[in-house]
Image (cartoon, rainbow, N blue to C red; front, side, top):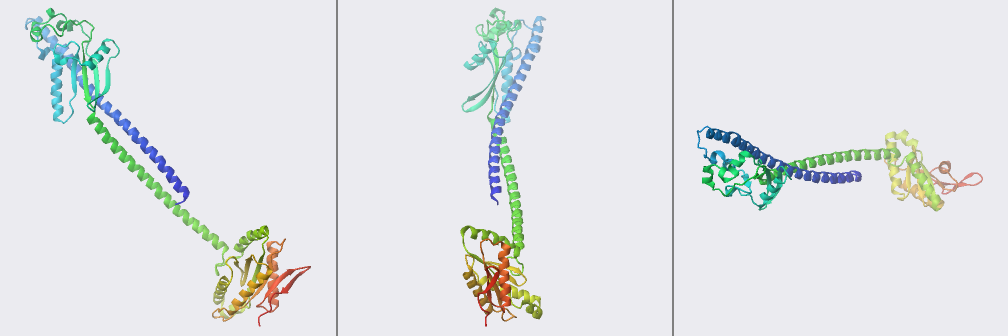
Length: 437
């Protein structure tokens, strides 16, 4: 994979990680908010039920009992907590409700009608409830809600005031002498009396356990986190696979381009550089030689009487001879030398770091190697060489032309020989070697 795509994947991994942890944190917050809302819903359901119950007792049951008393059908001193005490009835209803919840393995809901002056000690407000009741009477709040922790468990605490005392309330909570005789016989004349109109004597205190709701929320969070994680991993893997395939296609294209570039500068028959490729490599080497003042030479060679081979054996054999000829050249030049098939049976060799004498020596070495090489079905083969050292002020074309002129001189001298181009007033070709016997 390319470095660019690896870096992209690393950045993407960082971004995905930040998004994942951000979503996990958000899911956790939403889970807590969900637990709070669910607990509130349960508490408010109880609250609304109790308010409806209180209203029914006050508006229906008590009114009916008072009507029966005033009509002489009931004793005027009749009092029954089972029918007339909102507190008693509410407590009994909640006990039955929690019994039903227990059958369903649900946590009980704490319910209490807490009073600072209760007739029944079971309704005595604790210190926490007394503070809330004081706030209600001071007009600081119409409802109190808070998440509290008891014994390592979280509860939602909700408290609302009962109706402020009115004339109807004072019949049982005013002066003892005004209360029904049955009430005094049951509870005495000490507790629950001497209330004032407008005073809030009690509150409805509800506590809902949040343990089960929080656990359900945590289960939901775990599910959401797992689904999110797997989804992001799947997306990341898809992107990774896409980039891998993109890289593979890019690599194929790159290799094809390299191959096309190689083919554009390579002779397809011999595998040597073609003329275009040779010229591309020649100019930077020429500039390097100029910069550092190092010698450099060209050797142009041509296979002697190659046309006879094509005429006698055909072009297929001629092509095979050219390939074998190129292989002999490869084996007998230095690694720094640059070989080129200039065209047809002509070849050109760049000889870096060699002056005229060194180039002539290298050309002679090649000439002798070709003489002794076997080119089946052609038994022997020879070549003529023209050598030209690079001279200051030469351009490429002029330099190559000098090597070409030296080659023509070698051909004119009887072939299978090396000639050197020497510049003077005219371009004079000097003998570098005599033709082989």
